[in-house]
Image (cartoon, rainbow, N blue to C red; front, side, top):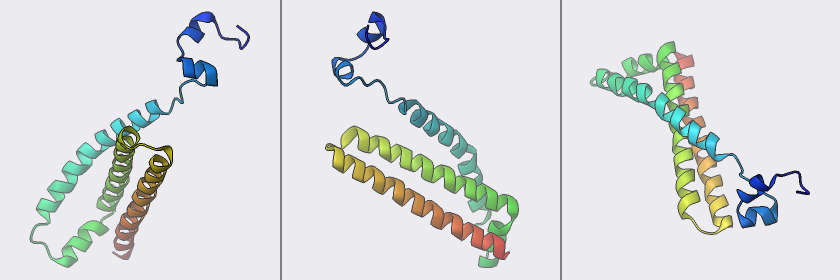
Length: 135
């Protein structure tokens, strides 16, 4: 074939893909993989967080600040924040891509989700760091 593709390779492409000369975007695998990685990271982090909250039941404000200010707890909280907001944004993006019609609306919602998730993650991380560095 003129474009260097074999007949077999050209037959595997959709008619629209052959006309456009486009193949797979190859971004779906990374997106799928990152959702699995964040979900695996969230399992122990969420378990640690829930157990910590149970342990802090009835604790004073100062005790709670001291807990957050401990280096290991601060790092685990930052990891929980990062994994949670990344996983949330990826999941919401999939929902938008699957169910929202119209390219402009879809792109706008994805940008809103990504931006909102980043802002919430930054605000949460800033709060933890401010407490941890003040302790």
